Image 1: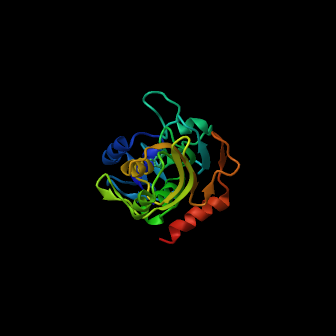
Image 2: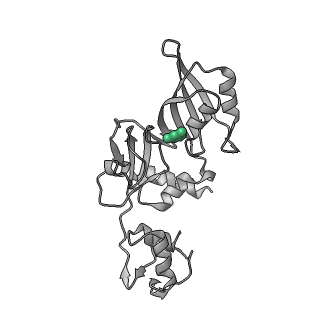
Image 3: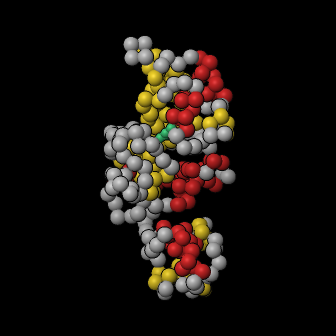
Length: 239
Ligand code: URA
């Protein structure tokens, strides 16, 4: 179930704001009944018309991308930079599920299925994300423990994290760690490490829920299998 204005906006008719205006102006019908109430919930079985014209129903598509550095996680960019969507040529209007920073690499899922995206991003799903993090400095055990237990970033404590020290390199004065979190706050990993005094030099998302980078070189993508999509949906059913 999705809000009517979101479905209209997602169908590419207009922006969310304008979709709200269309509804208020009485130009939208659901199953031939005029709807003027914002927030009305619809499913993909409902027939939605704007000014008498039915919304196009796109096939649902799902991709996993190994995001390279230097690409923004967005559908469009004001500065005309390349976006993750530009890396996957398809006719459906896909968007990223969550985000990775411009300089972060690794797993990014993209879809045009709002329900699928919501399941993965909803905090109650507690989807695990595993990152390989290279930081400046030789990290100390007490800093790792602080991060494991949670630290305050942007006024809110992070949830417990799993952290494994992978490698210390005295020559380059860097440390490599594997970090598992299930939150998805903005720049979370970078802020966590910066908070304990170790700036992040490199960041790669290696796993998200059941998805890993097997067989995907940087910039490569593949469609998800129906089984993978079903596993995500089954995660939503347990809620
Ligand atoms: N944490 C970050 O700081 N950046 C990302 O891109 C992902 C997680």
